[in-house]
Image (spheres, rainbow over the protein chains, first blue to last red):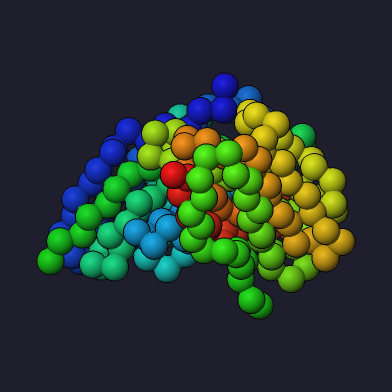
Length: 116
Length: 114
């Protein structure tokens, strides 16, 4: 199975607070990558952060960090100091090398709302 | 570098018609993947083209087809449109080689079938 699970359909956070969006995945591939994308209401998927399965350190990109726990198969996104513009749908996705190199498997997403 | 472009951005068609969507990847990227996004099914992979060849295919009927040109631009065609084909169609561009490729998405084409 290539399932990506995002258990939080919706999350609410106050501006300037940190928030964690959960993601777990199921794979038997030894080498894979984990991605987080942001999708505002306009529809465009915006790449946020990437974590390779062999990376020793958790990925960080500005206010975004990825809490990667390989043994638990989880890749939670942490957004620090939330801003109103962070309100959007967030998707976790997994990609792999080999025969499915060009394909991503997506979760159902988490709708984040940041309130003032 | 210019990002991924998709045309048209919006499209309204009627049942039974056919439609062609276009995607221009980031310069130098050789892989283009297509996804369908609907509220009910979420994001579903349609297919991926790499160097003018279909390399991966999702679980969609044969009405959905695609192709890639020598300049890596890709088109997706849907024939005999059905109401259920109404969706946001996203294309993603990536280098297509190496380990696991980051994919960069275009703004999408929103197709409405009446």
